[in-house]
Image (cartoon, rainbow, N blue to C red; front, side, top):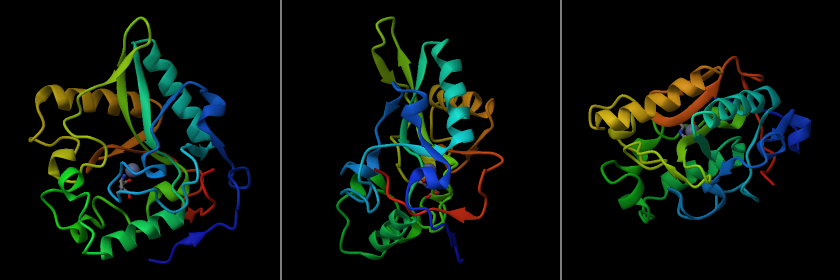
Length: 215
Ligand SMILES: C[C@@H](N)C(=O)N[C@H](C)C(=O)O
Ligand SMILES: [Zn+2]
């Protein structure tokens, strides 16, 4: 499907903000800016490990983080706005059948071409700036935090990643629901195929993708 792409060249032109301008100490592990991801190298368009979102989306996320901190929990963010060029890089990776380096960790039971659609979208909502991937951390009194057990790592592509998968344990499902409930209270909807993927509704710019680099 044709994607309408905004001519914005920087976040401010797109109406997006760096989440760290609202929550300076939020936990970030922006995986596509490094090599620990399913592509196995930094992805096109990620020049820095930063999280940009439309302002109302970032403000919603700040409210989620505030609610969670009162329960000794925090968010850890893996991906936010994703430039259109990054999505096209994903699609080139899918086509390269020779490159199977990340299969054992990220998609052991699926052919990489089968990832397109359900697990990796060719027209990802991430490019519209209202979608993000994240998990929950549990923190002690000294603010030492560790991730809750969600049953898979971020971007493990297979049925066990589906939010209500019977392959996950009841405790893992409860942790996924804790994340889904905290996000849902502030207007974020979970994608049932991936426990970590959420979209703020209504989207500020439905139908409009962006392509400025993350930097
Ligand atoms: C690739 C994964 N992190 C993800 O975000 N998947 C959805 C389906 C997407 O690409 O939009
Ligand atoms: Zn996602």
